[in-house]
Length: 274
Image 1 (tube, rainbow, N blue to C red):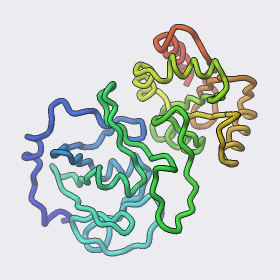
Image 2: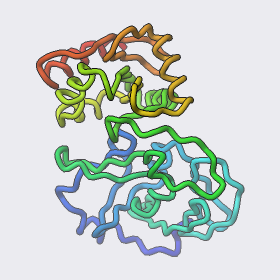
Image 3: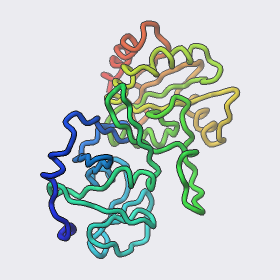
């Protein structure tokens, strides 16, 4: 048995688990696996974490596991250990479930942990490229950070993948972040509010498609955004398009007065077209 060398300590951890612990969100979705907090360490169910991250969790010779976002060469890993790149992390069993320390595994997978005190959540997302430590020789291009901050994607491919997994439609925001006045009003009056963020977490995958005039963009992102604007017939900014992962358009929207309550109510009406 993988954890035969470890003592079951589920009851002990259950006693110290905070009753009012923040809800854990991973890639903008509530984490459905087991979560146990031991002091400053958050132990999460390993298999569920791998599934949400679309990572590979492979049983290894020796009784342990290999966890990676990319294919890796098989190697022996001792029982009670998880290999992430060239690092070995401790794994524990809690109530029959393999658990791993979120704070330890996150930097190895390019994840960033942020506490959202206004919503009472702990949000885990892939870190922007500038904040992700790439392994030596790693030339893999990572999507740039969205101007709206965490919770928003900039890669259409990533948004489609999240939409497929979660079943939630994509909210595509075609914007001119550094010059468009109505875009800035929509951001300030709706997108930056806690009410919108809470609604978005439960209902949509957020995708920012920016057309800046003073902010530099990578050629790949610029080409992607232009192609999507042409595909969906965008002629002005801001344009909000709700679509499923197959590209079926569910509705069009833009700036609307009234703040987040008015905006999310109208947006929800489009989502019923799924």
